Length: 448
Image (cartoon, rainbow, N blue to C red):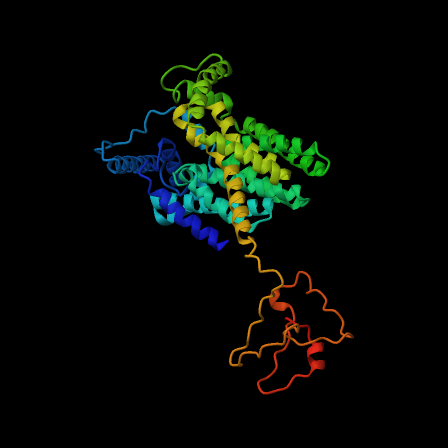
């Protein structure tokens, strides 16, 4: 596990150096909330958070060879309805608040992001190891997680690192349940609660994933009751969140659609039929996006390879991983915009990391098990000669190196099965200057 943490830390630092922006418009709200959680005045928090976003914009411009243009990040004039969307996501800034209070705003937020990313790597290692039975597969999957687009997403000052950690915690707990360990629910339930606190849409998507994967698993005979248990957990989580949202008057799908349709409640009034508007938007968005994917089918090919590997090699948990990857599609169905496509579709790379890690570990294992070059027929490998002894005298033709065996000698049995080579008894070599009788040679199996 320490190796996973070291590799993930190095890859996080490497991906963090990407010249693209670390802080976006959403990051402003998370920084502002984190400061408020530390006791900072809301107006002071607004100014300081805007200053950090502006500084990162200028850094990104200079890295691309452009002239910095941001002098004052405009944060005034947002609708309270828009701010309420971020107020309903306290998980990430609340987690970051102690780091912000200790290390400062920017360093504290990135320290919290790093820790969540490392947690995601450790959970990926454990989840893939448990699903595949190969520890090396877990190590490689955690490494691939930072090489794929998920690695870039986890190094930005957004909720992705926390969301991926929550997804992988649910997968780990659900895998334990499928293996007959109901204690896995003690990991699934807190992970779902964390997801709802970090980004409620991701929590709902994961609850629906458990419901669908559990129902599909329950159709089989071998894992029927674990599937029923997981499906019931997902259903209860979705219903509980709907009830809590109504009681606390939290923003829901309707508010998300209106935010998208009105450009953060500023450009135009609310649409009369938000669901109909969203359907029309999807009908115009997906044909063009699918055409782009088919033109460069790298993502589709990787996902199809993943489906094949999971179904053939990890069938018991295949549905869990595959449906988790498709949660990005659910995010885009609710927010079909091309500028957010790669970020919202990032979960599709979680099962890809699992499959690639397993395939790589399997290939490495097969390379290690390649047979040695065959020996010529009738020849046995010579036994090693102890240091300091003179070379053995040539044996007469027809005799084995250990001498002739009497007819009464019992045949030599096979070596103990499953015992490491170092633990198999070896014949004792004669001391220099001593004489070994034929009876002595018979008592010790020849050839070592």
